[in-house]
Structures are given as C-alpha cells and as structure tokens.
Image (cartoon, rainbow over all chains, first blue to last red; front, side, top):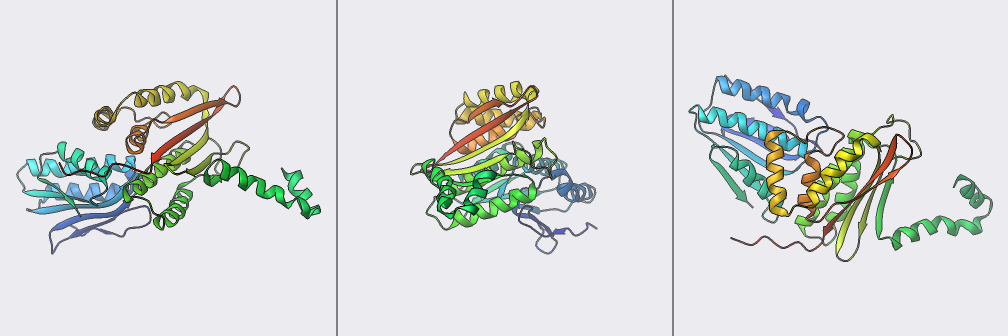
Length: 125
Length: 200
C-alpha cells in the first residue's frame, strides 16, 4: 500500500500531501527552497512507489503562489513521472490552480501542460 | 565614514549628515537598500519585509507577484554565487536595492563575479535582451527541456525567467575591481501598469 506523505508548508517550501480519502495529491504554497533536489526527494521517492502500485483516478493538484526557477525543474520532473504512469494505463489527472490575474502562473501551467499527455486542467480563481 | 560618524558623536550639529544619505536615496527613488551577507535566511527576511510593505500598497496583484518572483531569483543567485566566506563581510559585499517611481518598480543588485565568468554571463543577457516575449518563451522551453544553460555561475534559466517576468530589457554593468574580480550590477524594471489579461 502506498505510504502517506504529509509535508507541512513553510515560508519558502510548499505543503505537500497525499490525501488518501479524497484521492488527491496536492502541492500548496510557495516553492523557494535553496536545495530543491533535497527538498523534493521524498516526493520523487513517493512517485517511485506510486509507479509500482498505481492508484487509479489520482488527482494531482498544484496550488502554488510562486516558485523559483530551480523548483520549476522539479515540478517538471514530477509531472513527467506522473505522465509516465499515466501513459502505462493508469487514469489520472492534473489540476493547475492560479489566481486569475496572475498571467505568469497561468502561463507556467500552460507550458507544463504542453509537455505531458495526462489530462491537465487550468483553473483560474 | 567611520571618522565622520565619530565626528557626529562629538558634534551633534553635524547629525544632519546622517540624513544626507537618506536624502540621496529619495533623490534616486530608492526605497530599500541592503548590503552584507546574503543567504536563504536573508532571502526569506527581505521577501517577508517586501511583502509586508507592498501588500498594503495600491499595486496590481500581478505586478506584486512579479516583484516577489524576480526578487527571489536575484537574491538566490547572489547567495549561490557568493564568492566570499559568508561570515566575512568584505568591502565589496553584495548589495540589493528596491526603487520605486510613478511608473515602475526597480530591482537592483550588485555582486562580485570572477572575471572568467563575465563573457558567458554577458552573452546570455545580451541574447535574452534581443528576444521578444514569444522568443523568450521559446528559449525558456528549449533550455527547460534540454537542460543546457544550467551551469551555476553562468546565467542559468533564471536570467530568461527574470526577463520574461519583468517584460523589460535587463540592464547590467561590469565594473572591474582587480585582475580577478569585477562587480556585476543588474537592474530590472517592472512597470506598474501591466495589461490586464484579456479573455481570448
């Protein structure tokens, strides 16, 4: 069975949580860590486990305020991992939330969506 | 400087001198200056300070976000590239400033760079300055996927990102200090009035 994952958000790192009941994996807040690789390591490891025991209809939810360019690489890595699992036959989807006036964040979501096949919904609020 | 401040202690009449500096800041539209040690802790502190200040001002949210994003990128670049021992503040310590006038915000930084790194950095900024929004978007995609441009010390994808977000040319200068080092100054302008996104 897939492990829980619950990383509490801070001033410079996002909250990351796998909500088993709702079947949602979400990232919330800001991503500005100095060492992105070390911060996101547990997430990459968790995705490795997900690849072995995929969960159908898992929703990946991104509600980020801002993230540095180093984080954008890791976000792409996460999306590519998830995309691989999707391409192997497990239905999943991505929801990218952005504040309506934040054109930069909307654009970032659009650009990520172009790099993957997984259903990718952009939600302005 | 030390001599002058000691004079003030001896002669309060020259206290005015301390405020000359502030007058100069106002003349240059500078609203914040920091010089000294740069680190992740400092980045968080300055970001928090700036958020508190700007969150109560009448600025478009999208502009505010751009300021925070670009500022973090600049501050983290300085921490990453800091050539001096972090606990030793030398004469040419890095500097970060925020400027503000009626039409724009300005993020300004200055830090030491090894002379051997100048040609790469200069050519990357020049390349980025030649591109329009669409061109920058394409370049960002290429670099994101291929992973080139990623060497620390040279201009990474951060330079492209800052140019995209600021929506203005990046202004820079290299000022030689000696045979080994120069001061690299970067000046990024963010207009207060960004076009509101239209429904397509």
